[in-house]
Length: 468
Image (tube, rainbow, N blue to C red; front, top):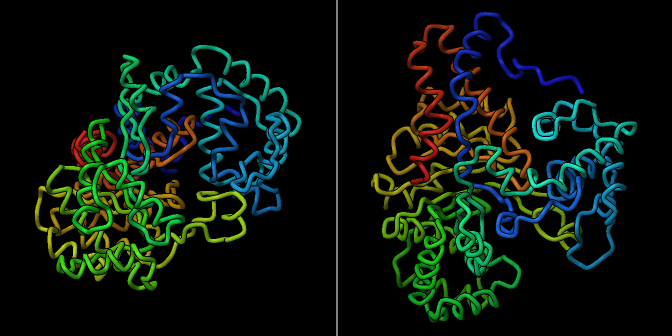
């Protein structure tokens, strides 16, 4: 593999490229703040060696296996575990060879940027991955993984991660976070409260999960008041393990602010399994407003990740379970949908709502104008399909004129693929520097201000927004 281009993602014209280099230099080695993601806290608790290269780069990364699946490669052959207990390939070398055979499919995608960066910077690999080099690269990475320097905690420190947030559900006992805390290791791994399984009536096993929710919190989840107290109880528990945010993956951005008597009646219907689709959606919307109310009480930042048709293919969902690459963007309304929440709390600066989107058409029309006026609302970075160089650039172009930089929250990597974290943050830093260089080159921002903004987008804003 050719060495990484030191000017990758910078502008092509000489002056702007030079400006981007100057902006990037002071911020490229700043600590990584990863306030939202899906790495496994067990890695850091047990600190065991990663099993093999396939388990590190292929099996957990839906960016990778969804692309190969789109070209006819079965998920079973890539080692993706089956929820129905069916057999899958477990030989890491076979998985790796198949991955190498199809690596060309990732050309031009952010995945290739991330993987090439990890190969070069984390493992010192200079060959390009191909069928001819697959075994040699596999053996090199496998050998590295036997060394203490490649254990999860050592990589955490090598990556210069200041803090990383994992994401756990409300029924999780947080045992791995407890183990991390009791180990005495200085790495800061915190949790985030993701209550979808007891908020979304369409979640599999919703009624049973509500029963369990009541058991572990000691609250009566057969009543609306008890159910809300169970959330309060659990949020306190999560805060005890470092949580500074809650996270909500709803199908849309709908919010409601019903009278409490109506909300109680809606909850009773939902709990009994008698709610229709609109009522289930209304309940999810009501719970976003309730979570906003709780955030004013306990200070947790409210993250909303709407607009994804999750698990779009029922066959894959049945065979392999959730989060297997079939979450797809949908058109999403924000101005109308968020109004009940914003009417209630949008002008209260004590509340911090971070809003993500998979609908780029709303960035300049809805999202930037909303964030540009409501004190409680900030825009999360481009997410899922758009955490790419082009997606990041479009985000800045579409939102900066109306929302500015300071109604955004920096970058988060939102990943399960641990070794891609430095690469993802590096891409974001380079794209932001390229954008700022364009503003300086065209006389819209002076160079000293651009230096401050580059630092803020990389480090300060994310710490401030997530109360870290």
